[in-house]
Length: 277
Image 1 (spheres, rainbow, N blue to C red):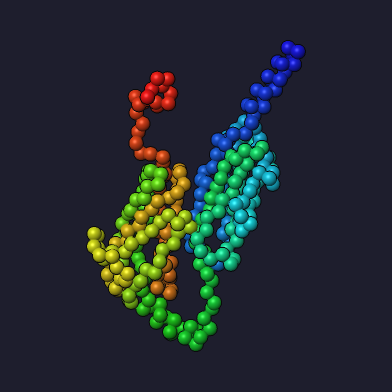
Image 2: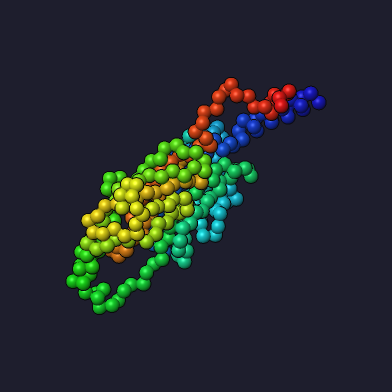
């Protein structure tokens, strides 16, 4: 009986030492924003991970699950030894799905969730080709291009917000200019995360405007509040009346943490104090 007990203990220790843990699946990144896509365009992204554990990783069909039928997962089906890398590929079908999207793929092992990776973006409807005589006339086409408005972001078109608290929304101002030859209108802004919003002003601290005349500058205020903890990179797509180049992308980067306040080690949790009130 004693020998059987010792055998069971050794067996349990061996099993626990080789059981897969979430930290064994070390991903370089777990979120990807495609930005703007045209309906029908392929949307494929690969997430690479390294086996940091002591046991071999072997993912079966039941271990990789997409959040919907519009997203097809592919993954490394061969054994991934400790120190080796594998991939989880997400393929999103954009056909017939205009608008913002956020989809996930859950990676499991022995029934336990190891990682959830996320893809997002905005799908724009594919416009029917214009077969009118005007569209086919090279001179008219060149004239339209030459006279079109154009939104230009002066300096970098991305901003790193640094660390922000969960549920916090923070704004940043971009200096913009209409470098075209006709009046510019920013019709709307869209993001796959639905967590970025904009306002256009004539100047810093000035009046909100809807149009920007040729050669004029303005201030684009972008408010960002990502929903997911950890590193986030999202893209806000500004749709303008520039028919030659209607989409301008602004990239937003932040690291979301629970709180920016440092917890003092001197503050005791009253629930752990036997006689605390």
